[in-house]
Length: 145
Image 1 (cartoon, rainbow, N blue to C red):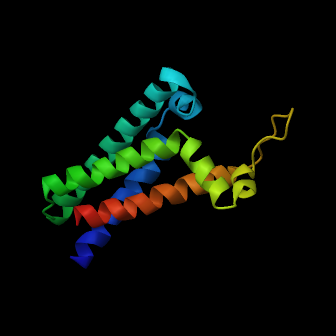
Image 2 (image 1 turned 90 degrees about the horizontal axis):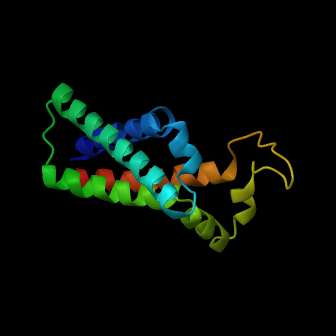
């Protein structure tokens, strides 16, 4: 059971990195937090591709290592991953959580200064977004395993 969890987590973590940084289109990255339907659709299409990448990784795990995954648990785990990924990528949730936790200044690290377009780093918002995703990938792996 422990080995299964570890294998599933590694597959999901790898899929996350690939989907968030290689599969996601520039349009999705630029628009997924926009207000209205355009932003919702951009985020939903990103999450659909993200989830498809995770399915591919889990199928590769089954094929390469002969692991048997329960389809119902996979569906439940990937649903948790998809819903939380969508919520985080709309950005309002992460910003509010950061402010409530007293780390609003960290969230703002790397953001352009007022009146300038000088974002030199990925910054705090990115770090908080990614760590939020990792926590939910851990939960998804527990569900699946």
